[in-house]
Length: 341
Picture 1 (tube, rainbow, N blue to C red):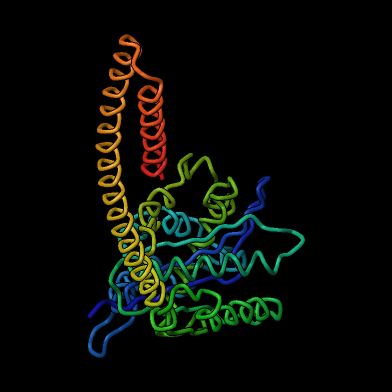
Picture 2 (cartoon, rainbow, N blue to C red):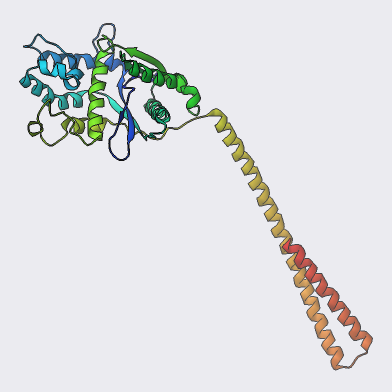
């Protein structure tokens, strides 16, 4: 049996500010057992990140979500600057050590039809997740989103869910997509089961957004650029985790049957044409043989005519020879036409 996967998504996506105005949506994929606790065992993701948090806040009674340290200025101000820099400097190694895969979909946004652009990006992301599961010989996968209070975000989330719910129709060529992507969960970030995955997804989404827009991956409010250096260290650590899967091999039974039947029909037609061509070649050879025989007879008649003219034989004999020659010539022309057809 194949593995199960979970993909964490920020359904809001992000828009690049360059001339292309590409709209992007990112998914972070974990193996189910890697990011979800078993009955008697803490998962590897939680073990590693909890250890990281413990070391980070060991001398501080204040605790925080990892993504809030990067994304929320109110949290940022409460954390000692030295501790904050330590947190930033450790992130490349932490993300490099974690086992996850990044998939993304980017489309050229149509400013006159934002809804359609969002739909295309979502469908592309679902198709990429399906491709990942199939190419990994996985059993199935689920989608996790963070619960949000803002009404605007709720509307976007509902739009994503509507497309997910219609996945069998809008991606009908992926005929088992409903079985392969079969779970949709909206979770609070402090949820014991899915919270850490949401934190990781939010950080990575922020970094990919900044890099795609030509910004430094870390805001200067977190750490000055002169201190951080001129390299996007976290992005360099995670870029090898970006999924570049093989094309999806879609097995559609109806299309497969049609294709098979078409091949069989073509094979039969080709066999018939080969037989017809062989028969035609035989007929051409037979007619050519008859033409050669007639040509020989004409040569013979031509010699007889020359002899008759030289010996001044009667006109009746000459007329008979000419008539035979004319008959033979017409026979050659007729057989040549038959052979051509």
